[in-house]
Image (cartoon, rainbow, N blue to C red):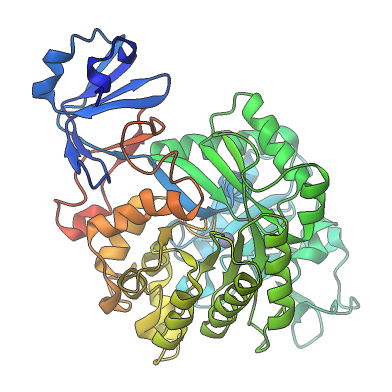
Length: 510
Ligand SMILES: [Zn+2]
């Protein structure tokens, strides 16, 4: 076999040496040198063999023994919402502890804000606040006279201050919209807390300016790069042809972004087809992925119903798309697996369908998932960020099967990991650590029987995520022929104590 090292065309433009390379390639699991030419990996080997190559690379980077892994792939996130979240006032449990803290954070931001600006706070969690209640309009009125919208971490509630309520026209006489609730005090006055009213508010609150939007995207790109993330899968259910064009425009504008695979929202499937955009359309920077289908069980009933869901999956398949079904509760996960199996029976082609979240996966449900031959995109960092809430809220019999990565891997289900940012921060090391330790933010264990090894967790954020996202030939491991996407870590997650994994710092190698 002609080894690329001995071919004159293989003169690399970049050599990374003296690295602890964790390749994720079974044929050569560890190495110390990686050579790159035109953005592709051309050679993986050892420092002792480097002298024999006769290369004079333009750039040689001495990694000083640090750990080099494939660039992380976030298999499920929402890039533009994440970008927007970075422009908002962080009111999450990592930033504030009380309503007084929220007031302070908002009044700090208000000082620099122009007249008439809307202030947006994000991510408060009433159960994590000292007061253990939702803030009210009066709490927020004390912070500023500017209009404020404070969003709950669940995405299902928000609080408006008095100025904001007045501007969107919500008062004592305003009836509740059909699908939302305006909380009121004894006198009938709105308290400021609004449930399920985002759709109502969206048309009434001014949109972000373009400059603000682009600044957020830039910040998101920089943040992801600093976390070692080189590829993201945007799983937003409203993704449309217009959203694709936004991503394409951002790329051309030179804003630094990771590679993006954008799922297509099911409701927009016809538009993608009319535009001649099929599964895999695009290039290695921006690519069209699965059709995203939402399946919810929050009101006790499945929506959509199983027959309709099967028809939706079959419709995606008929157009050549694989399907990705959002399913959280056990009954939803089971219905998703059954619909996929049924749709595949009708059209037995090798589709790479996925279930997003698969948060509850008891053994009987797992059996259906395995039988359907479907992959799973899971969010191990939720164990860290939301574990305490699961321990308090999830039924006892479901607890051992929450984010059941051990069970999924043992059953041979292809498994990818992602953050669901902006739901939680997209730091892969927090996810790897939580998958290994199963520890919540307060150090309590969530389904400890579901712990995986550091290598298994790392794989779910790299090769596993690539394969489950249709990118297995392009990225996810450090081997010849793949894209030169790397993260350089200041410690080896497979070698340090489990408690220290979370603090490992990463960066994309550029
Ligand atoms: Zn999501």
